[in-house]
Image (cartoon, rainbow, N blue to C red; front, top):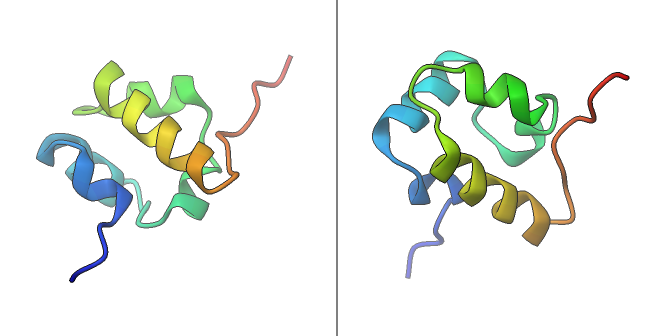
Length: 67
């Protein structure tokens, strides 16, 4: 049985947006803040929720906002 990559659960436009941004792993995804992810063309709230859950499952999180 093939392992499911977390990015397999998001739509193709969101997958392409991540690839175009050079993001291929959950670890690379942690460099972005949620707001930055949503700015990528093809990434919406649904993809954000799926990716956030995947990060959470691996004890990872998005970068924190600089405030």
